Length: 610
Image (cartoon, rainbow, N blue to C red):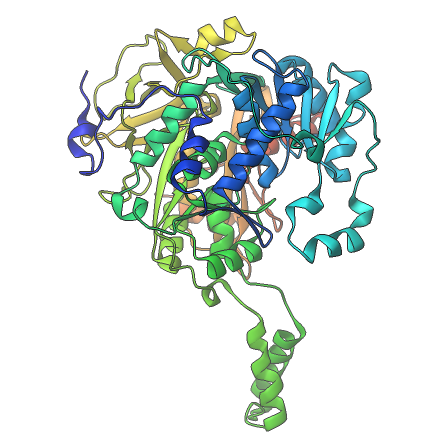
């Protein structure tokens, strides 16, 4: 087949690169062998070496084996980013069992559904009420029969661990001492002499990763050892040697490991590179900026909403800053110079304690990998300007482990494009109805083929048959390809809005709207109108300190979009727009909110013409 991207790859990428077939725990084996005493994991001020992580992983694997965990078993991870995430992930893989990732934001009913669907028997979690208390009832009401409870105190350095117990003791769960509760310490209380398990990388499922998939119903994507191992190597190959050769290479891990993007890019790729993982349990702007400033990481994978929040970070208001504002207002009103007075000057200058994003040194960053959602050009360019690093947009799905394409870090980086296919990855654009390839430059559904494509959906043969055809994955996304083999996502088929036979793609409208400087966040969707016809609605959050009206937006969009594309309804919100569990803007939540509102009102909204 025609692969124009191979002719336009940067020199460090080879489409025919060899990707060995290996179990995923080989990644940790190799890191521990190459970099035993190198710092591997940083969490809340405490660090572990690769030798220590590997040793704990082996001992935990032995602990699992002592409890009967083997091939065919499912073990759940219900954890925020922490050293336990890394240790347990590879421990489970070593036993031949399958890892099932659970979002820490899930409630008990959601956990119950996934436990039954995936056939999870053991769950690994923390001794925090916010997590433990949601799982514990399921020991009595679901197939779940045991929990491994990891101590938050054990993940913290001294004296933070003691202070945590003293100051945050009320947040710790009361964990009974019985056969159904296994402590982390008891699980690693052995020599790590694990019984070797024979793994078939291309057939054995390493991870059940749940997703709404291309058909909307939560399903467990069966990712084999080879799927994940290959995609880790494919991702690493996208890094130029100048980055991989950095001796003290470090990876920021603020995207959650339970999500497939973080699992492959922030965790497994870091392990493969021997890069120190700088992890936080959740994304916080101030903390992320502080860690980058202090620890000088090299790589930062994230979703667009994270980069956007960092771009607009304005710190926390303090008395010093408020005092500074007051002084300035008095000076302006009374035409006096108060800042020259010694006492006033001393207090006023202390307002420097109020730090904005420009006060942090982010220049250590060599590259940022954006995924999970389309990256608006303005967000990309603003973050690059602030950091000096390259922000590259990539694309993938849970079903592809997940990465399929990415823009080159050293090479032609096209804003608005998802880049070129990874090595050993084929992509075709096909007409949705006929499934025939479209001509170059035309829109078509993106089909992908490569070693990272899932085995199928767990116990869902019909859903599997719908998205997998002759080794090709139907993504449900509509894209175009240029003459150099760069792809651009136009929209998702399921998000397309039909207005009087005309196809409106939300992404087209959002892209233009983001060109208005006052807009910070924007979501466009089709909602039910009168007579069963959909109408285009837009939700907008202005930047702090900025204002934008419905008439401003209509005036800005007029002449840039076709009349039918201009939203007939526009809602301006002061609060941030809803996000998914990994922080990307959630169109689905707003559509459901709108439908619920319409049901409460008992009718459909009117459909004014723009």
